[in-house]
Image (cartoon, rainbow, N blue to C red; front, side, top):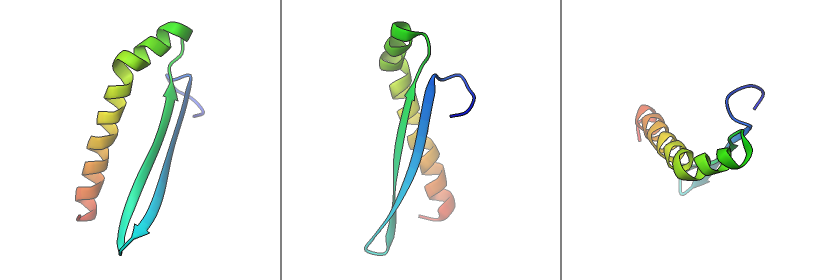
Length: 67
């Protein structure tokens, strides 16, 4: 991450072909600023929010790709 609201963020896509199907594995890591308070917010709110966000986004991409 170069700029933004998070202290750090990394998002990696890994593409694997298994039995003629492409499997995408998302590795997403982030940390909020503000030390202990940020870690508490991550645990209580942002982890679930970001997971659901990625699931919804990936479903849209999957539908667009025609699978």
